[in-house]
Length: 336
Image 1 (cartoon, helix red, strand yellow):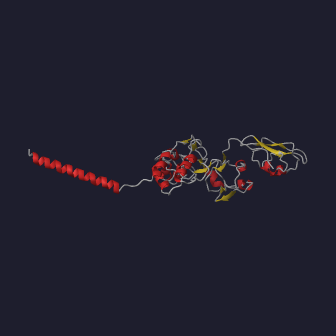
Image 2 (image 1 turned 90 degrees about the vertical axis):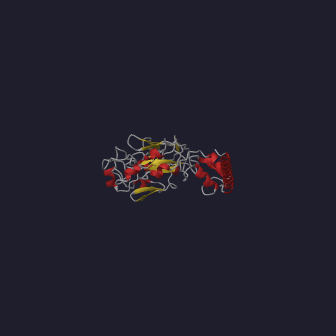
Image 3 (image 1 turned 30 degrees about the horizontal axis):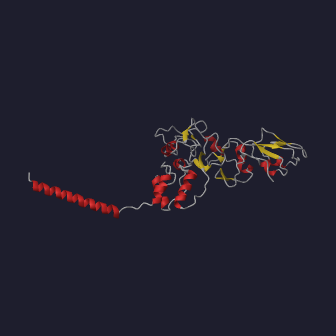
């Protein structure tokens, strides 16, 4: 073995390695991407769910976007108001207050209420099933019922019920909107958590056509529109559209709907009680749409408890503060 040649080879390789190391060190300094220190701080306060509800691939991407001013400081719905405030403090901005939302299902046509047009044999996935003639369900607007929303929910807030309709656990739901984006029929929607009443039907067909494909679908009769005390409902393409700013969640539409297409999220509602201040003017009788108040003119009236739905409209029109709303929802006596 020629040791001289070996030594030269080793020195050459060592020198080449040293040179490459110097080049890489210089390149790392010159080509380094400067990370905004705020980005790292923001990433530290994010929950790390990587749910994508913010509109970015994950928490890292969201943190980078916020630091660059490309995303709202309150964009992390998973983290909620507390995370939004902290991120806002890091960025020196005030996080806009927004009401938390929750996902709801705007379809009640399960396997018992809505028949199928054909037997589907394929991948058990709503999006793929929808590609075949809009899905097997007879109502082409309704929930397909294969649970795609269950698989995309990042917090396991959705399960598939026995009638093949998704059941949403409102305590777990973070309002991220992942299910609403993935639903091929768009029957999952986000509403404010404080909203009590919503329409649970998405069909735009007329009455007879609806009845043929669903037992409890909206038939577009317009009774809800006629009875709404605040004109919050209008008929649009055979379906009542709700103006949430006008809606007072009185629940009248829920009880007037012949097909029970509206849902009332209230766990309980108050009931009207007439106190001795009543002069028997009869304004409440005229206002009540359920004939739940009776009495002679000039004498104290009374409420028929079984008919009262707790809408509170009589409470609002009484000039004598003679009607109390007692029970649920924290209603109290009318204040002048």
